[in-house]
Structure formats: structure tokens, C-alpha cells
Length: 462
Image: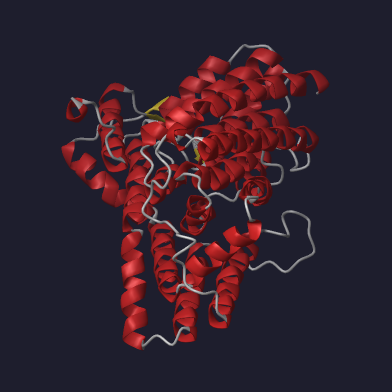
């Protein structure tokens, strides 16, 4: 009987099914487009265009088109995998994780709020999201070794950063772009967003700590099973934490700190610090260089470093595949000329509404839009120039349109299968997508209801 039970398809199958559904939609949804000025759509200019339905050939090529569109992210993931492969071979991570667990002496639960706050700060200030992919192979073993399950390790990163992204305060890649198109400054509405971040980050920490406590007390209550996941660490069998391994861990930690510093746009945040302006090409080079340095510190031969690095890349190849396939969905929508049509439907739904109704509808309209267009910067560029003028007619300031946009975008991106970070993180932790939804849906509902309350407050104090 056990074999006859339904089994959730893999992430690859789910994404390919979504590609097929989007292709079918290009035959059913009218093709249309806005007029664009400097790649920005102009409100009220939507018009029909010649249909471009996507057939079998387009479906088969969609994933590859997605790879071309997301090649920078995919290469970054592979370089992280190679770097981690070399570091793991040294035994430094196993020794370091085991040493941390011994030092904590049963107080491992305090890692949850501390790390979630750090990731939350990254999410709310500079939109730390894709960059979190580098941390899953590092932190999942820590929580597995501490007696939790892979879901706890994933949650600390994904929900910690995710709550921050939902309440982006000065995130230049979501809030900054959207504010520019809405004709408001980054500081407009920031007090409401700061309050929202405090509440949301607190709710996420409470949610994860409560689940972690249940799993620690009774492993049978885990949604996936304690120890689930390929990456594990055994405290009792770990190698000694020698001086060489300590130095390797210093380089290991410094690599991640440099990554974080390199991508933060201090100038756009008003901070007087040098800006490196790094993105995925520079980050890929960073992890490649760090991998070679660690291999040399461990006295590995040249051919040994190369073989280990390539094997590490292979370990994360599945994650890179998922990112490419998920990007193919957006490519297919754009090729079928239905992206602007879906946006136009939202524009029509928002016409002739009052302030409260308008801002709540904007938020609800953005939820399905984010499923189809997971990129926050892409969605902001495409939609805010259309939504913001409608808000002015309804008596709603551009800052509230921005808050509604980023809140919806951030919420959907912690649950949607079209978000490469979600599917990639679950693949790394070997957590089935249906188990993640079973676990996170209550928190997502809390976030949704809380956002509606904050948006109404914004209307009344505006």
C-alpha cells in the first residue's frame, strides 16, 4: 500500500509542468504590449499585438533560454559548489561545526534568532536573496548536527532573509527601483517598513524556534525526518580542529564576508563606505580564487585541487539546473507577449477604487504577478510605472504602492516554485516541495494578513 501513495514530483518536473502551462496560456491569453520609454512601460498605452503562441519547440527550448538568461547566477552556484568541495575535503568544516556544537553545549537554539536577524538585516537593507544560496551547504550541517532537521537549517536562511526582503527598507534592487518609478524617495514610507520588519522578523523567528523545539523534543514531528538531507555532520566522528583547519576556517569565513561587502550598495544607502559594485561574475571569481587558496593551504596537489573543485561543482549542478529552468518560465511568457496582458488586467482591476480598496487590491494583484515574474527588480520595472499613476487617482501615495509591491513580491518568493532560491534551497536540503508548503503555509498566511493591516494603517496615516 505504501508504494501506491501519491509522491510529489521533483522540482524539475514541477517546473517543466509550469512551462507547459505557460505555453498553453500563450494560446489562450490575448497578446498585448505597452509602449515603452527607456525600457519602462507607459501607463494607459496597452494595445493588442500580433499573437505569438508558444508551441512544442518553444517548450523544449524554454529551459535552455532560461539558462542563457540566468547564466551568471548558474555559474556562481557552480563556483560556490567547487569552493565548498575543496573546503569540505580539508575536514575544516566538519571540525569547526563539531567544535561549535560542543561549545554551545545544548544552547544551539540561540543560533536561530542570531542568524535570522543577520540574514533579515541583509534582506531588508540590500535585498540579500540569491546570495543566500552560498550559505545553505554551510548551515544545514550545523543544524543537523545539533539534532534538528534540514527544514530548520533552510528556514533560518530562507525565512530570515525572506522576512527582511518582504519588509525591504532601503533595498535598492526592489524598493529603490520601485520608488524611482513611483516618483518618491527611498525614505518615503520607511518608518512603516521598519515597523513592519520588526514585526515580521519577530514572527519568523518565533515560528522557526517553535518548530525547532518540537523537532528537538520529538523527532517524529519533523515534516521530513531528523537527519534528512545529504549534507550531515557527526560531532563524535569529526576530525580534530587543528591550527591548519582553524586558518582554513578563517579564509572560509572571510570569503563570505567579502561576498556580502562586495554586493552592498553603500552609496545608495547613504553610507560613506567604499563601494565595490560586485555582482555574480566578481563573486564567482572570488569563490574560485578562495577555493584554490584553501587547497594550497591544505597542501593538496594541483590535480587534486582541480578534481575536487570540479566534483564540488557537480554537487550543485542540480541547483543550477533548477535556476535555469525556472527562469525559462519568464522567458516563455515574454516570447508569447502575454506578460503585459496580465499586467493590463491588473491595471483594469484597480481602476475606479477608493484608497483602502486600491492599496489592498494592488497587493492582491501583485501576488499572482510575482508567481509569473519572480524577479523583484524586473517586476518593479514592468509594473510600478503602471500602478503608481493609478494610485494618484485613488488618493494613494507612491510609497504605499511600493510597500504593497515589495511585500507581495517578498511573500510569494518564499513559497512559489518559480523562485529559483526556494527550489534551489530545497534541493540542497533534500526537502520535497510539498513538505515545505505543509510547513510554511501558516507563516505565509500570517504575513499576508499582517501586510493587509500595515497597508490599511499606511492609508490612514498618509
